[in-house]
Amino acid sequence: MTNSRTVRALQAAAGIIALAAGWQILSMVFPHYLFPPIREIIARTIEILITGSLLIDVLLTAGRIFGGLFGAFILGGILAMIIGQSRSAENFIAPVLTFFQGIPALSWVVFAIIWFHGIEFRVLFIMVMTTLPAFTFQILDAFRSMSKDLFEMTMAFRPSRWSLFRFLIVPTIVPGILTAWKVNLGNAARVVVVAELVGATGGVGYQLLRQQQLFDMAGAMAWTLQLVLFVLVVQQTIAAIENWALRYRAVSERAM
Amino acid sequence: MSGVDAVIRFKDVTKTFKRPDGRGDFVAVDRLSFEIAKGEIVAVLGKTGCGKSTMFNIVAGLVQPSSGEAKVIGRDPFREFEFFRGKVGIVFQNDRLMPWRSALDNVRLGLQILDTDPMEAEDIARAWLKRLGLAGHDNDYPHALSGGMRQRVSIARAFAVNPEILLCDEPFSSLDEMTARDLRAEFVRLVRQSNKTAIFITHQINEAMEIGDRVMVFHRPARIAYEATLGAAVTEDARRGINEDIMRVLAVEQPR
Ligand SMILES: Nc1ncnc2c1ncn2[C@@H]1O[C@H](COP(=O)(O)OP(=O)(O)OP(=O)(O)O)[C@@H](O)[C@H]1O
Ligand SMILES: [Mg+2]
Image 1 (cartoon, rainbow over the protein chains, first blue to last red):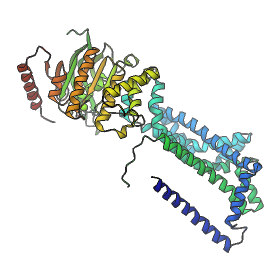
Image 2 (tube, helix red, strand yellow; image 1 turned 135 degrees about the vertical axis):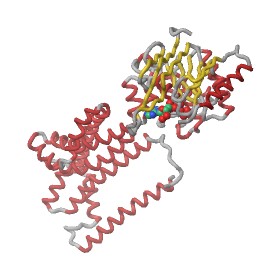
Image 3 (cartoon, rainbow over the protein chains, first blue to last red; image 1 turned 90 degrees about the vertical axis):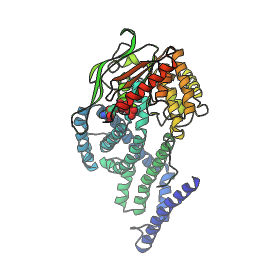
Image 4 (cartoon, rainbow over the protein chains, first blue to last red; image 1 turned 180 degrees about the vertical axis):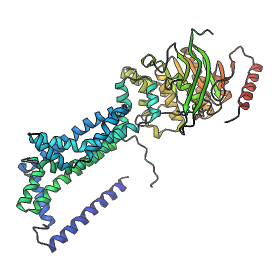
């Protein structure tokens, strides 16, 4: 177990190192303002992390991602439960969500700027609208995958609605919810920088825009890496939660 | 037996299922009528697919009769949801354990739904596991238990709520003969002791005759094809006669 874990970690590191090596070679061939050397990128990345005034921008963006995801999760959960219990609700809501799914993040940015004033509210609105459909559909799928056998077994005890929710529905949809968080986290991290174009005066998106104006490639890379690192850390956290929450699952000793 | 003190009463109950290919209806239960008095243990025999589990699901209130009347404690088990809370314990044909709950927590499910004090519920659940020879497996997840152990956990789950009525669908079918024999004796003792009413489905004529005060043999689709009352007063010779009758009835029917 520990052994295969080490191997996995090494393989993962090898991929990243190969990517970095490729970049380093490019930095030797092209001028540094196009491809700054790895050392410089790392230095700038660390600088952001240890400089309070810069770290604030990272945390601000992280907060916006979480805020948006949390909002979409709650709304999506409610919508999924409503759709899951009624065909007509599904006929009514599902097409709207599908319609939303086709709207690009940039369009929401434009709408948000025209409709709302507060910067934070605009960002939240954009984040929620762009992640809501996927969240809803994923929770709905998890809900629909509920075992009929377990449902009938539980119903035979005649539970209250709350008991049914607590003892059967929640444990059933937890794996789906965790997956939904993992998937939507990546989406949200990409959308958030676009959302921050609504006039945010802080955050990773704002900083990226500044680097572009300064023509500072190392800075652009360093700020990009902040987001990548953030996603990485949160993914790992979710994976750890997953391992704990789904520890009941049987794992075959046989490899595929 | 008069209709008034019957705990379970079926009157011309028919259940038809839609065929998935739309070629009309499929009759699973065909004008089935019987009465079961309080404290009685009735064993049900019948060929595979004759509608035993369907009858069972109607008593449990999980399936609604297409026509006819099914009454349990004088009420409609499908319509009256809350009335039956804690009154019926069910051992399904498959174990239907929640994979995310340990053996102990699976046994505790019904007690939680009944809002039993958590400490008390735990003691009851532990005692039942012990009684069924599963002491020391309290914290095992279902995937780590053998088929027979899982079945015993599901028996414990049904008994733990101390229901008035017990419905058992081939509960001992996945156990070795020695264990099954012990549990059969224990089952009869428990039901008698607390004057419960029980329906016990089985494929084994011996088991039916050992457990039942009465044996009902189902025709296919479900209708009473043969019925015999057993008990202390029935002589050894008579029992042998009944055994032969049952075999004859079961042999006559052609598979469809
Ligand atoms: N939900 C359903 N939809 C369609 N057909 C069903 C459904 N449930 C049961 N049936 C059909 O009804 C018939 C009776 O099924 P049932 O499960 O009651 O049989 P059984 O007597 O319990 O059989 P076994 O001894 O094999 O468990 C079967 O032919 C089955 O295919
Ligand atoms: Mg059956």
